[in-house]
Image (cartoon, rainbow, N blue to C red; front, side):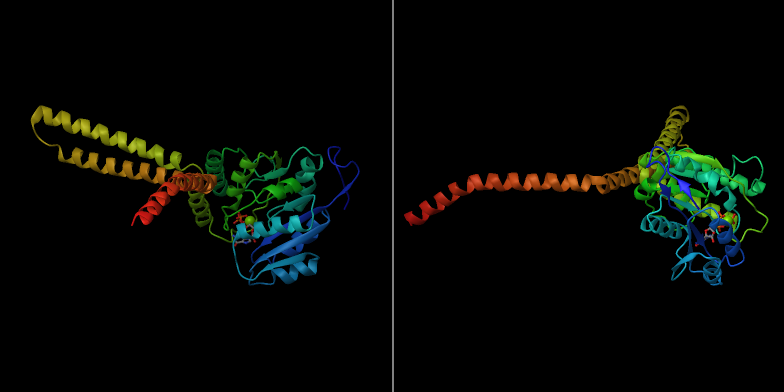
Length: 341
Ligand SMILES: Nc1nc2c(ncn2[C@@H]2O[C@H](COP(=O)(O)OP(=O)(O)OP(=O)(O)O)[C@@H](O)[C@H]2O)c(=O)[nH]1
Ligand SMILES: [Mg+2]
């Protein structure tokens, strides 16, 4: 397979395109996926994420190099391995696609074109730009919802945040790192892309949902959403906790005003409103406090710790030098005292 370098890279240089396929129990599909993928890339690596079936054997027989996880570590961990493999093999472009046959390897040339032409560093295959095939309605709803949440949280907009069909340039492979181990890795990747300022291209892809879902889509969606909340709370804790905190405190205040007004009119305590006021106030303060604590932790983790250590060192040395200036006087005094006695 020959891919020519773009004018912005070394003109005419043959680019090395590698595909990585994360797999968990995909023996039924992986053979076909590898064979079809091989036609479009220079090498195929299958990340066998602790499969209990013959995924690894079938993949190897089809001509892939297999990187085995000793146990199931999750989709995100498999993607981390894929990115590391891409870096190790010195790939100019790393394509990642699912091993369950839902992606069409014939879409690879279209997906990687923006990277080969030097127009983007990351290409995200989108199931929602293609006019032909679409996921079933109930899956689309969940995917759209997760995309809206991820776009809002990460500040990086794409039409299909949960797509597993992507391509990365060498620069992207160098800059993008993941921490999430589960299915939330696609969302986390969007945060990482947003932070890095890498150029993103969205490319329409076709998908096949002929097979019944192997894993619960509801469990999948809720899992991603939970991790998304964790990601946002780490990235923008004041926004996530501070906003509801302020709203709750304001609601508590309005209940308080009502309690006072009622008391002024009737000299009676509106017990329900008073209770509401206390509860809303407490919840609001708790949220504000959590936001501030997490924000402080974030600042500390993001270099604040280094700054604090520097300030402490400066303080310690200023104390030492102040003591050093005072010390001779003390010595003199004690010396004097010694001589006197
Ligand atoms: N779910 C899951 N998939 C994994 C894991 N490790 C690797 N994979 C592979 O990651 C790819 C995506 O997983 P899927 O379960 O198909 O995720 P999906 O395409 O979003 O969901 P479906 O529409 O149900 O297929 C597949 O090739 C899996 O075999 C893991 O721990 N869990
Ligand atoms: Mg799938």
